[in-house]
Length: 183
Image (tube, rainbow, N blue to C red; front, side, top):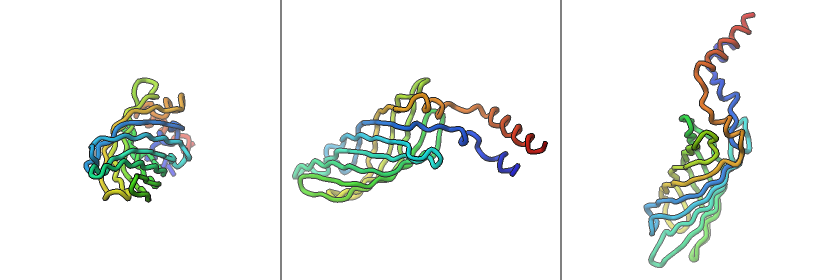
């Protein structure tokens, strides 16, 4: 038990994740023509303990120009934090849904990662960068690169969630916990 307390990252015990987030931006897809398209997404925290988000996204792509085909993909799935680097949180995501165009309709699937950079002291506004492997009925699988902006809709919990933790405070808390076990 003492070793567990010594090595367990105490910051995870107190972390509060933002409860809601909404964002939008542009995508670059090598299989698209034109190469740049758009997306919008919404995430809501479904489990603080498991750190799981319900993640829904709608994106518009143009997989073909001859004939011209415009396609919309509406997917929902899960996202979970993988790593945190100061104000940047990297999320892994997987979604499934529907894809429609003038010439086809079918399933749409994606998986990838999204880096969310919280800006300023309040960390409410965000900038996103990501890479997503997308499979849809109008074309083969391809990687889509995203950039965008967003807003955390839960303030002040998001401020608490992403405030950098002083490593000395973690060590002091662990020492205090171990001392209390020895008494």
